[in-house]
Every structure is written in structure tokens, then in C-alpha cells.
Image (cartoon, rainbow, N blue to C red; front, side, top):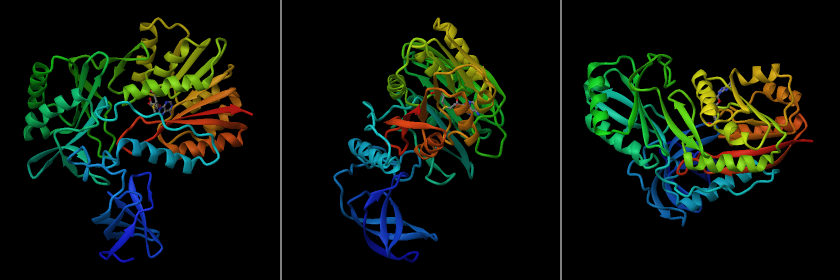
Length: 431
Ligand SMILES: C[S@@+](CC[C@H](N)C(=O)[O-])C[C@H]1O[C@@H](n2cnc3c(N)ncnc32)[C@H](O)[C@@H]1O
């Protein structure tokens, strides 16, 4: 296989990043835009020691799974990987990826989304100036370059309307001090929060904030978040509220949830409820159970679980999220739930009480080896592990197995349609 050479290939598989997998001279080549069972002419654009990257030149035979991408910038944008795949087939691919990864486990079919487009409640649009010209949109695949676009088909309508307004009115003067604009909305209360993220709150930003408020009365919070960092961490520490408060109010399974802009919240609120309900069902809780919820965010799982059990202690590292979680429990009249601000591993190491069921919902990197050992020391009867990364989930299930926990089953949930992301729940039981 040589760079710039052209080949006729047959695609046998789809990688979990959404690239078609083919072989050239017995070597693997990944081709974005190509689907399993398709034939195509490709050009090799990169050659690495163990694989190559090809560019699709001409499709010779099409798969029945293919559709015309609903999004006009899908070819370039790094946000969605499965725009050219019909929704049913997206779920089939996700089931296949999970089956390949979890060969030995009892695996349920993915719980599909009823509304696979316009589902996201949060967007972080990068803003850049190129030779004095403002660009806004999403990052290109594997790049910091922006695909300039005025809407996104997986964002909900409320976000798109505000974003289109900004796309039209946010000029070069406004863009000068900005890195991102963050928009989050609550579906149940029709509230919207806009967070400017950048170096300097300018007069132009204040003026645009006023225009936004006039155009969109459902905006209840406008914040300027100061971030001068050079890395790719989006939010900075310090902030100033320009209008309203620093939070919005959403609901989750009947509970009101106050949500600070620094607090984590699932991006697909409808599938979030499907996820939590299924997790509760799998946990098979009893009235006398004592629960711990590690990586608790704003307390959404803990509050939903609280009515089935004796008590819930939630642990979360972001101070604002813990404040939200305790306020949320109070607001909803929940008395058997409390939340502490601490690193989850440190908490587990110190904790000496009894635990029947432990919920964990860590970030993508999963749990540490030591964290799993400490969970074993606490000896909960069941562990309900919610994960947004099947690879770290697999690693952690193996580590739990070494610590005498069997994996009873895994339930994938399609939280991120049109992207290659998969959320899943694994139920682990002490042997
Ligand atoms: C995937 S989110 C889940 C949040 C919540 N369970 C939910 O569904 O909304 C992971 C959460 O873990 C928190 N977190 C990250 N590292 C942590 C740590 N070392 N200790 C405790 N919490 C942590 C994050 O702030 C975030 O709220």
C-alpha cells in the first residue's frame, strides 16, 4: 500500500469511530464515508505502520444501510460520525460493536431513541477569527479548524434558534475576546442559559447579550466565564453573571433539577430518563437498601433511586454540582439523600458504613484500579456501573471480576444518535 495510490476495495466492517474498514495488500485501511458491504474506489492519503487511511473517490456499490446525510456539513464536521447511516442501521452497528467487545457477557439490544434528531440540550460552539473573519460552528474531524455552520441537526430547536441568531449577529468585534459560546436549555421549563467563554467581557458582548434577551424571553441566565488557558479545557474558574442567575431548572423523572453551568447533565434528556429507569430496574432495589452513588453530578440518579431505598449518599467532585444536588433534594422534599463534595476514590477509601447497592457513573476514563479495590473492600452486594465508554467499561468489568464480582448483564442505551457514542449500564453482583 502506497500513499496516493488508488485501489478498488470492499468494505467489511465499520470501526467504532464510524470509518469503513477495508483491506489493501492484507493491510487494514480506514475510509470515512464508506459502509460495510460497499465497494468503492479509494485513494490512500496516509500510511502508518499498522494501517492506512483512505479517501473515498467513487462509490461502486451501495449498502442498504446508507442514506443521504440529513446535515449539509456532515462530510466535514467532527460532531457526528453516522449521518450517512439510517437510524435503524446505526443501532444495528452499535449492537455489533458491543457484541464484539463483550463476547462473554449477557448483552441486551440497545434501547433506541424515539427522537434521534434534535435531541441535545447543550452545545459548545467554538469561535475563531481567521484573517479578521469570524468563524463559528464545530471542529472538523481530528482538527482545530472550524466547520462554519448556522445550525446543528442533533441540537434541539431552542438551541438552534439562538445559535442562528448569534451566527447572524456575533460580529468580529464580539468574537475578538471569545473562544466559545455555551448554550444549554431545559426541555421541561423552556429555559435557556447562554455562557460566553473567553478572555475579556467587552462592551460588544454586553450589547449582544441585551439583544439576545430581547429576542428570546426564555433566556433566564447569561454568564461570562473567564478562560485564558492555552489548552483545550473549555470552562475557566471565574465567572460573572450578566443577567438572571448562574443556573437553569430542568426536570428528571418528576424531580426538579437546578443546574449550574459548571454542573454535568446528560445531553439527551429523554434518553436520560430511559437510562435511569432501566438502571433502577436492573438494580432490583429493596426498601432497606443503603446506596452510594459515586460521580453523582446534580443528584439526578440518587434522587430517582431514593424512593425505593432506605438512604442514598452521593459523591461528586464539582462544588457547584454538589450544591445543586443538595438543593435539588430539598426542593423535591427528599429526606433520605445527601451529597458530599469529594474525590470518589478518596471517599470510598475512608468510608466505613454498610452499602448494599453502589451506583457509579464515572467520566470516559472509567474507574482507577485502586478505586475498584476500595469498592471491593466496601463489599456492596450489587454495583450498577453506568458508562459512556464501552472500552473502559470492559476493562473495569475485568478488574471487578478479579475482585469477585460477576457481570450479570449489560444494557446499552442510545443516548447519542448519529454519533458513534454508546452509553451502557452494567449490573455486577458479588459472587
Ligand atoms: C458522567 S458524569 C455523571 C453525572 C451524573 N451521574 C449524571 O448522570 O448526571 C460524571 C460526573 O463525575 C464527576 N467527577 C469527575 N471526576 C470525579 C472524581 N474524581 N470524584 C468524584 N466525582 C467526579 C464529574 O464532575 C461529573 O459530574
